[in-house]
Length: 301
Length: 333
Image 1 (spheres, rainbow over the protein chains, first blue to last red):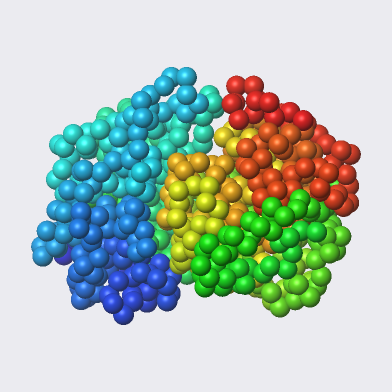
Image 2: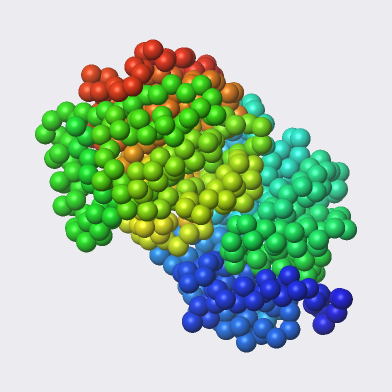
């Protein structure tokens, strides 16, 4: 049964309810979340947990305290980084999602957005004779400070900028260009290389999904058709959390969420009987993909 | 005799966190400079993954004088290479059969527990890599635990190597729980490093959550230097190289399968890698990280490596090197 409440669509599903309870078990006494039971605080796990828990009524006390903890852990320049590692700031984009529409965290979100707009990876001029074929001068975002820009952090940042109303910013446009430049000639994306020494590398479902989700609404379908076909084929067969969730988000962003998408999510959750509990971020992304029917912008914006 | 013999993992991590870094590094370096290091390696012929690999690994462990007392009650971490598996391309990653056989061997010797671990460097979906590679079968064995090093809790350890500007490494917390770390790479050429063997395999011991996918932090500070620093800091106890089917040409992902038909083992990773290089038809002195490791972390000179089992000359099979790949030029033995 689907019930619409304000802008949030949530669906009563025992599997998703269990998922949310599992996420809640990873809540630490300070209000943040770890990736595994009794683990250390992680900003990415916390931000994803906020998003998943916010998708259902009754969890606001947890989401609000977690949002506040993220803001308290925010560094002076607006980044959200891992403890012990200030240069590891890729969770900043996910924190932007987590604060979106939360009112009292607008200031924290604006600082994070400012940081993202002022930050890029390590880049250098394109050399057609270089072993790597992509254009390393086109700026995106890196995983870690002082390193090259790659697909996942760039796509995540573009999604964050988009939902926060920054899609006209020159950095956003350049980031779109960066993703297109890293698209494999036969379709799909991997972590961010295309050809090395003339050989085309292979795509991955999760990175293709996140790239397509970020590009939706900003490029013509003809520019990504091969990638969409690749992702459709992958979504049919992959039943692992990260790949399936992002495949569904990628397809959903282009209006192609598969009819059986939610069934596949439940099948994937069921594999915890074999693998043990998934991590907090994986549970959260799966729950979100289910609740939002693959449309990440609808649920967060 | 390998100078690293008997220096357990727990003792190492306790030492490095309790003592001033200068003392630890100084003591290590004087051991190296006082005389030439020597080490033993073991090569076993193995034609197929269906061979009795446990028996071969146990034979190697025995030849290398690893006693059951060293293993009994210990927690063994097998660091496999599962960087970017693709179904049907078994030459990319360490074959699960070799890892399962190693696990069985250590359990037979009385190990309390075996972890199989990887922090895959390209693909973030750990469950996908487990299923593509066949490592998901591990979950059927209650005595073996798989650990995803990319998303583990962590600890900060000062860099003992000093070849990069990295002041410290952020390691997965599971490494501190292990008494032995065993590097289990695939025998492959590499388009940046020349070859990827037991020492470079340790890149996967660092979490992608902190180093990225790929681990660009290490590429930035220098692959050769990072290999040295990582090995200087982590000090694995053992290596078992899957060379039954390796990779030649444009490794580490897009090369072609090469039947080498061997397992190579040893306590000293530079010696193991040098032996692997020779049987691949590669001069280890021309591989930058091995040249830098020579007589610092272990011997790579053939005169100082005692060969047990097969001799590398009898199992040598030249791995294809590619002219237009800069790291391959001048490598041929």
